[in-house]
Each structure stands twice: as C-alpha cells, then as structure tokens.
Amino acid sequence: MDISRTAAVRRTPPRRTAAGSGAVLRPVDETDPPGHRAAVVEEDAEAAGSRLLPGADPPEAGIPAVGDGCGAPRAVPPSDGGRVPRAKGPQPGGRVRGVGAQDRPTPVPAAPVDRRPRADQGDHMETTPSTPGLHPLAAAEFAPASTYLNTSLCGLLPHRAVRAVGRLAQELADGRAGGSGDWAAVEAVRASFARIAGVDAARVAVGGSVSVHVGLIAASMPRGAEVLFPEGEYASVITPFTVRGDLVARFAPLESLAEAVGPDTALVALSSVQSSDGRVADLEAVRAAAAAHGARTLLDASQSAGWLPLRAGEWDYTVTGGFKFLLCPRGVSFLTVGEEAQRTLLPMHAGTFAAERLWETTYGPIGELAHSARRYDEPPAFLSYHAGRQSLALVEEVGTEALRAHALTLADRFRAGLEALGWEPVRAASAVVGVPGLGGCAEALAADGISVSARAGNLRAAFHLYNTAHDVDRALDAIERAAGKRA
View 1 (cartoon, helix red, strand yellow):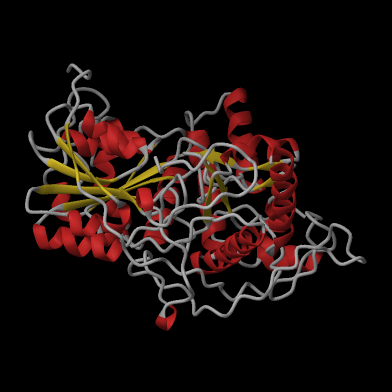
View 2 (cartoon, one colour):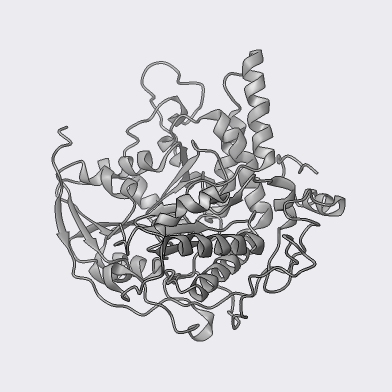
C-alpha cells in the first residue's frame, strides 16, 4: 500500500461550551511517614501486605500553544482553539462537565494554599486535610530519585515489579526450562485489567502497544468510511486510519465532539483524557450521539485507566497502554472488543497464541481461533507481563477511587498554586494538568530535579500514588524561580 496518500479531511467549525469545574476534592486522610520518601514504618508495611491480591509480591520495608517560553504569565483567550474556559466554581450536585458518566466525589470549598513549610518541618510536609501525604502502599513500593510528576509520559515501576523482572531475567540467563516466560502471568494480567475495566476477561486482548491495536481496527474499516476525531488528538489514535488513504478523517473540537457526530460517521475515536493538556472528554455525550447515528466507538484510556473509572463494556473498542497510570513497563497494552464488534474485526496478526487450544496448533494454519478476544492477542513480551502482573495487583489493592481522590486533590492544589502565581492552567477534573505558555520551563524544572513534560506548548504535570503535597509545592516554587529568571 502506498502510505504517501492521505485521507480526505473535513473540519467542523468550533463551538463554545460550558466550562469544567475547578472544585477541590476532599483529600485522602493519610499520614506521612517520618521524612519525605522515608521507608514505611513496620506497621504500615504489615497493613499494606494484608491487602495483597493473590500472586502479588509482598512489599519491601495539538492544542494551540500560548508561547513556548517560561517568562511572565500571559493572558490566555478563553475557549479559543478548543481550550476549556476557566470555571467559576463547582456545578450543582458535585457533577463536573467533561467526566461523562463518571462523577467526582462531592467537592468542598478550596482552602487557601500556603506553599511555605512550617519552620519546624524543613522539607517534610505534615499530612493535613489540605496537604495529602504518601499512601502507605506507595511508601513501601516507590522511592523516586527525583520529584516525579511525569506519569503521563511513563509511570514508575513498583519495587515488586522490578523484582519480578529480575527473577525472570535471571532464570532466562540460567536457562529457563519452561521457555521465555509464564503464560499464567499473561492470563493474570488479562484478568486484572478486566476487573479494572469492568468487563469479562473474554473481552480483553493483550499486546504490546496501542498503535498496533488501533491499526487492527483501522484495517477492518470499509473503504470510504468516515472516522471522527477530536482536534489535537494523539497521533497513535489517528494515523493508523489516515495512512490507509481511502477513509474520510473528520475533526471537531473536543468540547463539541458529540454534536459533530452525523449520519455518515462510521466510527468516533478519541482519548478519554487528552495527552497534551489533561482535558476530559464528555464520554456519556459521545456515546449517546454515536448510538443515535449507528456509529461505533473507540476509546483510548491510556491517560486515565487507573485513576478514572473505565467502563469498557460501554464502548465497541477500548485501547490502553499499561505503562502510564497502570504502572506497567512498556510492552503491556490492552484491547477490549464488544461482542458485536468481534463479528467484523479480523484477527490479522493471529499466531499460535490466538488458537482456541493453546499449544495444540503449533504448525500449519490454525483451524479454530479462540472464541474470546484472545484471538486478537499479540505474542506477549514476558518480561513486561511478569512485571505487569505485580503492577496491576498494586493498582487493584489501592483501588481506582482512592487513587482518583489522591491524584485529583494534588492536581487541584497544583492548579490553585499556579493561579496564585498568575498562570492559567487548563481547568479539568483531571490528574493531568496542562499549563499553556509554560512548556519552556520543563528543562529548568528538570535541572531542579523535577520531572515534567512539554507538550504542544504546555507544561504538563501528572499526579499519582507516589506523589505528595510536598511534590506539588516544590514544583510551584521551581516554576516561580524559573519564570522569574525568564521574565
């Protein structure tokens, strides 16, 4: 196929929509261990171990850029280029527009943010209702060498996952009798993700990357079909469709994506959370519009699975990279396929792992493919899946709601601090925070030992289990210094 051809592109005029909420959640009531990133005390380690799932290791003790610089804050025009305008406060009933069917816990008024440590604390933050500390499981599993606010790029590996990789690597060096890995680990990962996604394991296919899963879906589309995307969507969601050259790609602002679905739309493909700036799609509205027009749906949950509830059964397809908020290594990814969609999705890269009776069809064509979504499996990277088994067990032990509350509290604190400094962060009920015009500060923060990303002119920070209010405040102080130097 000549991939130099490009798909026909049509654009939908932008529309203005209501703003998302800037409400602050009631934070997790945890207690910091003595000293930032100190080892967990014995009682906490035992408590963490008591919540382990079977098979888990015990714990050890393009949005338009508003400048690319890092100087003084500048005013950002509301809503232009698809940006969500600043909210004026919480919406009735604690519901946040853009989260779709997922409701945040009832918000409470935000307390003023005092970013100065108490004189008797030094660098160690006391855990209070406005300064959430380190979760006990996080203290047992993570010890980052920097202030790590870059989960949207890549999540940290828990200690238990690192040990699992080390064990398998040593076995492979010694000459492992059972081959390159344990198939039971792959099935445990499939089952764990199925629980997180709220579907039966028979709906889950495993693989190594989101783009391969999307490519499988793109290959199944009939010639001339229209695929609708949000403007600025991540390239891996779009490109497998556009390289075909015989599909119609159409783009609309994220905030009006549901209204852009029409009678000619065959598929709506989007991310639940935008990689560039953390905006959250109105998932319920998109699903309803697609159903009204008979269009299928594809959701990329890579930036949300783990902290935002994923109801994969409500979508024809979902794809998820496991190496971000699910804390797996690269090489772990997931595809879920609805029963109706399985009738038309061809398993184009089917191999020995796609057979209904594993290990019985090693040579010659496979006569009977798996009756489940396993027929869409890619051959697993066993080192990644041995680690992923441990990582997903940890995510399940903590729970999506607890992780969500912790991450959103820290994200809201970060937004409030940025506003106090005169910056305009993108307002969204999201663990991912984008700050237009601050992308150029990422290098200065890295020099200060703070890991963030620059995306589409935005500084992007993301918050997870291993982050605390101290991390937020340290980043705010570094931004204030860096912006002052560049002003």
